[in-house]
Image (cartoon, rainbow, N blue to C red; front, side, top):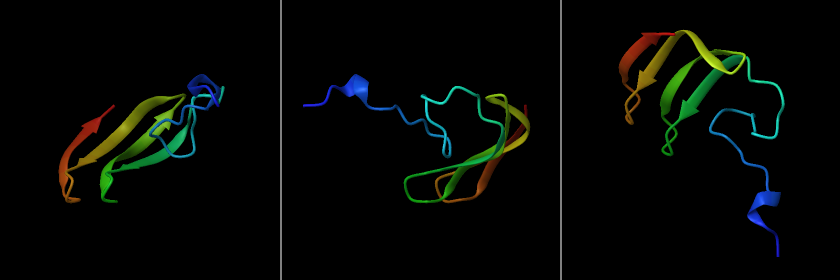
Amino acid sequence: MTDKKDKPIISKWNDFSAVDFEPFTGFNTERYENGEKKEEGNFKDGKKVGKWTYYNKYGSIKDTKEH
């Protein structure tokens, strides 16, 4: 039997896991379970930077925000 603490914790960001040591830098798109975009924008050193776009669960833009 495997203990839960032995499994890596995968975050919601693309190809980034909590076991990685360097904060993510680059473009990211997060999606709803139905495959539609939820939010997208850039990260620098693990923090949101620049213009981010937020979508509703149907894929329409609901907001934009400058980080």
